Length: 451
Image 1 (cartoon, one colour):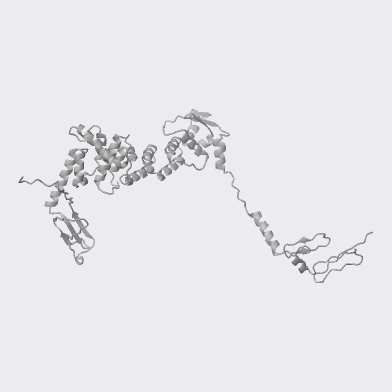
Image 2 (cartoon, helix red, strand yellow):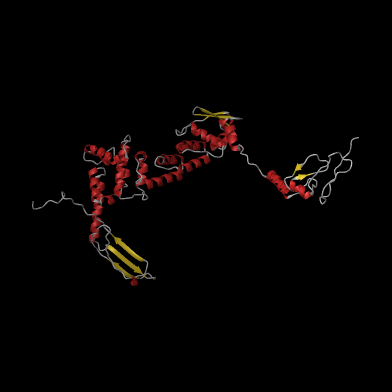
């Protein structure tokens, strides 16, 4: 038998291991003198082991109970990894339904035909539409049919709009382009898709501008979106005078313009004469919609066009002719009393011969009587009154009739008050008549009566 050999592992406190008698030649092994030294060198020697196992820390495989902090951290890390959910983007149910059932038409139980196109759909999804819900639940013949031919009476509805409307039944959200919103709204109203109708309305409100406002206003009235119609009207009241546009003037109908000019909320930056000028340009574009010039050229072209036809009026103003009568209701809302108070404006209106002379004569009469009242009536000028807590009049002052000539930015005192004799609030009544002086040039002098 061959020689037997063994190795003795001493207690870590002992200095070194010794070779027993009978061991093979050169059969000695040297290791670190202590367990601490072994750990320091990163090695562990276990009985019967032929390999050295490198330890990453001060851990001894000879003593499995001596766990280190690093092992605890490693275990915690593994546990954390096991309990941490991993996010992986999956195909949503909505997208799957839209792709598989709507686009691919799988398991379809009904076909809808319209405008030469065919859709393979599902009754259970179509019943979300009030139109199809009534069709399938009632005693209509279509309730038992597998192929239904839809009649499309609305010219605003096209194949693309029906595609979006049918697709909205199979998905959570729909992206609507402003250029397509009217067609989609028409399809949604026909199919009674309340959610899609509401989304179309919100899209219209958010995209009102000079190019869309007239189309939106008309469509909102057609399909019963009162909130959109109101929003469009507000936009027009705020922008008609401040952001004039040739195409906008062409699109504005007589009824819409009448509503705008008659509103007290029409935003006018300067004077009422600007409203008259805007109406004159608008009327020209309504009569000549093929004109394609710029906004700067519009007023000049308008004046030239009306002046050429003035000789054909035969003593009538343009609004009295057959061509001009449709616009009478709009021009009736002009506040002529604020236009003729300016001499230059009054001359332009007289020269244009658009407004009937009877309208102007009536306004001239009213203004003349107002001036006479201002000159001859005792209740004129500025009157101030103050009352005590019981309602007794304690102070009453009036300026009487005064004629003032003021330059630009000039101020003039018309009444002096003693605050010690007054009790607030003060009640003030004013009656003013403003007359702009006529501008004279060197070539515009009155004739000399002696000559």
